[in-house]
Image 1 (cartoon, rainbow, N blue to C red):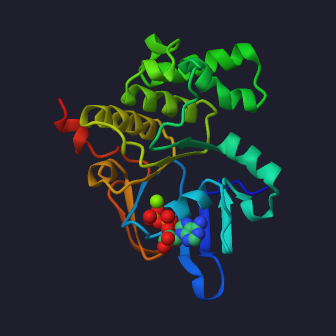
Image 2: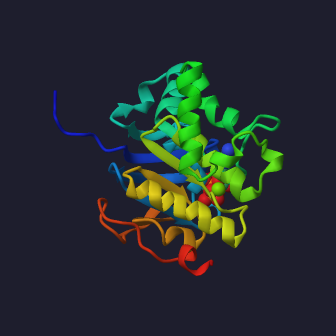
Length: 248
Ligand code: ADP
Ligand code: MG
């Protein structure tokens, strides 16, 4: 056994073609990307540049047309649909722009859900969900349903739900796209703290303020990586600027 820890993400020459023939769309034209444990990466790019396509591949929701993808050392291309869904449940925590909480279920029940799917028993499930809600500052809202929470609070519940399985990767798609300035700052501060605690985070965003919190910024242009710029070392602290400082 090798002692080397595999990177969390290892994408080699991934392409994605939608459709065939004259109508084929080359959404990704050869993307290679390695993300180490503890990194915090923002993926930016204009509409149509391939962000969602890449996000779907990173999140094991879709497979590349060509190329290889390893998540946490596991070759995703070799897995059947059932194994892929287990991999998603155990190794990836998703955060979406629209929160995607289940209505008429309490915050606690929402956060317990991925653990329930993972077969975790009731008592440890509850304990871990409460701890995750505490981490996002919602210990006093655990019995509230989504429609009794503000947008910012709902997104913090979604962050707790993403965290609760201790995934290898937190994958966020425009996580602050539906939030006001104040709630945006709250969510970004939580991501900063998670990054500081060693979590691996990939955020898709078109907002420069959100990207400013990342340690590394990748820019997609027309299905290719046009820029890959590191702002802070993988093991370093997130930059202390952007909205979090200005929103008082
Ligand atoms: P972004 O998220 O950066 O806006 P997308 O990954 O959604 O970009 O899209 C990249 C390109 O692929 C666009 O030209 C888009 O129209 C096309 N595309 C995305 N999804 C599909 C699909 N399911 N079928 C056909 N074309 C698609
Ligand atoms: Mg998109």
